[in-house]
Amino acid sequence: MRVKDLKTSVNFYGNVLGLEQISNGGLGDHIKWFQLNNKVQLHLVESEEVVEKNKGVHSAFNTDDLSEFMGFLRTKNIPFENWKGEKNTITNRPDGIRQIYFQDPDGYWIEVNDSTV
Image (tube, rainbow, N blue to C red; front, side, top):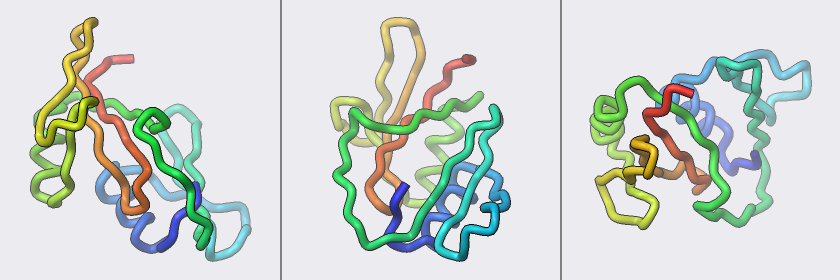
């Protein structure tokens, strides 16, 4: 993912989403990597290139306690919304899963839901 300010993005993904930063394979200080639980990695690359953002193209994470996570976002002054864009509320999917959406410092969309998958 192209990010404008690597330090800000590293702080967000480490401290808001709780991702573990790992070695970037010696690729330089403008690239940082994070490890997710299932051996998937997130790569952040500092760049001035602007990438178009769209809620339909997002990363999705799950949590055991969505209400607690929403409270955490509120303490960090990170606004969230449902799929329709209604502020401070959730989307209830037909299968019973609850989800919210918010943006990282560069405007990339993130979904967090309470799925057990």
